[in-house]
Length: 204
Length: 198
Image (cartoon, rainbow over all chains, first blue to last red):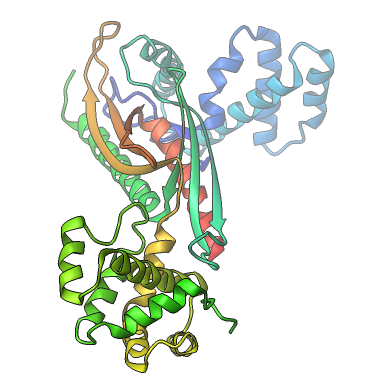
């Protein structure tokens, strides 16, 4: 599976019983694609798509990409996002044998990715508890204190800004940190199990 | 090693008193003081316990206080310098503590000293500290703007306690799968930093 590894989105587990052709984890660059394709000039889109396809076929498409960049139709940064997204998307689609990825399925999956964007927007409208907007941390080592000439004790300082505007700064003893990490991993595992089960059992 | 206990007037007086204490009762006194050494805000003994001690050790109130303070001081210095038992014994003899009392100190220090030091190490002072972690996972089925949702939603409860006051705050954080994954990755980064320290 295209490893974007650590930062990837999970597509809505609705409608289909099968997972998206991109797998359970959508690579970041593909997830960001709908946003960047919005209001994109059709001709520019076609040119970029052609350049990406050429690259996938093994041809050097640097010249074509340069031309598009020079035309100024698409800002360079946005272009890199689009190219990255398209490249990954097509690369994955092309990996699968023709029999397993039919055109309809491909279209459906692409639509799902779009829906993920819409759903994210809808999700903001429901009543919810605050979430973390900004998370900063640092690891300190206490060298000495008034009680110990040589302490050499590590600790962690965390600062969190929440969506409701509140901010918290607090220390986390190493042992508590391990507990936190363990629990978060446990919740993630539970979420995975829940998602697998809900795809199989809960009928719409 | 350099002397960790200066022989002041106060120390001299205390030493005389300590030397006079019944040798059978001394180790228990030492042990108790060492156990509670890291609880800086609290006294080693309650009022009742002090009264009983006064009787048991035949010491007047002020003398008892001096003894307790001095024993505490000696042990605090031992912790601060992470002194070796043999060194401690030498230092105590230097301030003219009787051999048996010095021996008692050394015994207690050899057996429970490291434990005490560890307690001090764990005691970081910070205005706010994370003390409690709780969580809840639910599957959101629908909401007022969408009918069929089916998204897992986790709520993390973090209990933060304040050093000086009894105040404790509770943070309730909500996460969907994505956010939680991002958060976890950051925790993993912190872990690798911790690992690089050892």
